[in-house]
Every structure is written in structure tokens, then in C-alpha cells.
Figure (cartoon, helix red, strand yellow):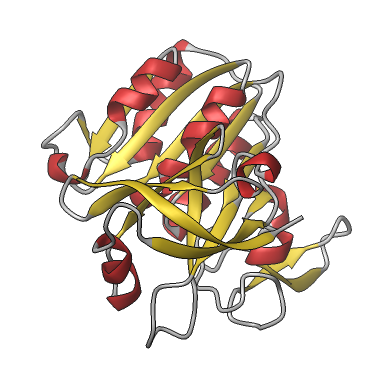
Length: 254
């Protein structure tokens, strides 16, 4: 059941070039939240639409969020002070199903944070993480602590392999076996991760990044093309039906 409540900022710091880590006191929300879900944050007067932020982790009553500044709303969030109040709606959407599984997590950019809590919940987790450059890399120490193996790629080769997260995932697949792939990031990465799962015969769950309005399925902003069990196409909502889908459900644009 989603809650709407004012949450106190307990901690805020910059991570790398554009990302920020925020910890909120959010009892109720944290009790209901599951890995892969998200919250919708109000970003002050003058910003009508809330901003969807994936849940990175929870601990007790603390809600850990990691986000990038991409516009005026997230800029407002990045300027909050300790003890400020932020209105939060959540938890929202459907998350990952990873319990009891050996999982390869594939994350790109700001798609990395929602994979962290899911990795903690898996029976065994390895991670392939991709970033634009070394100064955009985030949460590497967290994944190293949780995962058996972590492979990193950057677009410019400044850290790890020169390439993307799927290139890094192939290295891990040469050494280890998995019964599930979970991916989050931009659409080209998700499409490539889904194709990799199909190639290797491994089921794949993908968390989709889409612009959202309401966050509860009342508007059409986050409509996405899906296919039913008979292969027939239809439109669903990332906020309500996702953000996590089986890759076989999603119709990727060519």
C-alpha cells in the first residue's frame, strides 16, 4: 500500500559528477517497500509533477535514494538541507523477483542504484556496471561488498573495460553460471541485456526508465508497448505495471 507523507532529510551528499545520495526518514514506506520499486517525490513550489526516484536501499525507517540532477526538480532535491521535509509518495510499482536465485545484475548509469538492494536479496549476485566515464561511476564499493564479482565498463575506457555494461556482463558469463539476469538503464542497454539473456537461455527481468506524471497509472505519460502471453501487443504503464517486466513482455523499438 503506498503512503504519502512528509519525510525528513537525514543525509545528503554528492556522488561523482551529477549524482546525489539522499537518506530520508520514511517509516511506513520502508516497511512496505521491495527491491525494484520507486517513490515519487514532490520537488517544491513551482514544480507541478513529482519526480520518480528508484529505491536504492532501506534500513529500518531509513530510505536511501540515489538520483542525478537532470532538471529543475532534481536540482531542487539536490539543494535540500538536513532536517528539511520532502513529500514522498510510495512505494510504487512492481519490483524484482530474485530470492533464491543466482543473478547477474546489469546496470547502466543511474540505472545502477535500484539494482543494489535487489543484489542484497539474491542467493548469489554478480554485477556488470557501465558508466560514461570514471567520474560518473557510483556505488562501486557497495556492489563490491555485496557481490561475488563485479565488472565495470566505461564509454571512454577511463575505468575498467572500454565499452558498456553488457560488454562487461559477457566477461562474467564466461566464468560463471546464472539462472536470472536483471537489468536497469537506458533503453538500448535493456534491449541488449534482453538479447543477451535470449542468446544464453537465461530469463531476464528489466526495470524500465520512463518519464512519469502521476506515478500511479492515472495518466498516459509512461505508456509502454508490451505483448501478452499470446504475443499480442498492447500498451501498459511503467509506473503501475512495472517498472520491472520480464524482457519477453516488452516490445523494443527498432
